[in-house]
Length: 341
Ligand SMILES: O=C(O)CCC(=O)C(=O)O
Ligand SMILES: [Fe+2]
Image (cartoon, rainbow, N blue to C red; front, side):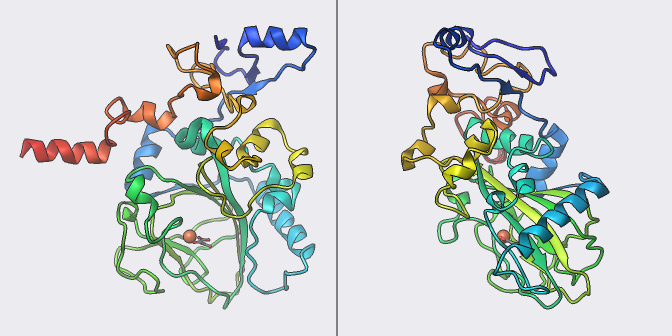
């Protein structure tokens, strides 16, 4: 049975029986981490209404400088980088230690864990250098296009995009991120594939140090940059382990050895494709429950191996039992409204 730990403890041993067996066999004991903080219920509600959430001053000025330096170091080591030109590499986790350390950074990974739980994976890690006059994206949602994620996942995102903004972007026409609030419930939007400015769109103006979260189904575009400021930022998207990677097929095995346990698991670089759907026992638990400190849900079936046993995500717990089975709160609400009228 999963051993509970005191609230707030950083890490504890779990599964005493298996632990003892490991010790008898001379195997090292694994220390597991409590899931870092994630959504408050108000933040979740705002995120699900808007498709977007903003955290000002998530990074200190020193943090901002640290990541700007890391981008510069990475760019100057890259033969494909041309000074003053647009630059948007992926899989940056493998290129600089500062970016590997962001895989499971407690400032943001708890939000992704709240949605994807034990099957959390890093979908993509990228940085953008967007100078004046560079290319800028047309309206699109992230993920699949001809059969969008929303067809199968009408409410929850199959990608959560974390943004760290490293330069002040106080006005439009500075290469800003632009999104349509609430558009994550729409499979198609007029203006798709164009640069058109649309009524209701929100042109994101941010101070350096801001963190944002985006629901992947949210429609977005990028403003042209007509300013003398070069926009620099970081995007890390997370998804369930069984959704494809966005920027790699597999990770370099030598690089994987440099990671901590949670970072390595979150990369999900398995030999077997289907292992992404059914990860091995050694990758459970990814984190211990934030409230109970346990590696299993209360009352779960202890005869089932931990990696095969269902664990509820924070979102499931937050949305209550109708969600755990039938459709989610928005659909449930509509169903109830229809049946009442
Ligand atoms: O750079 C941005 O603001 C957004 C880029 C984007 O939409 C994407 O990479 O999918
Ligand atoms: Fe995008």
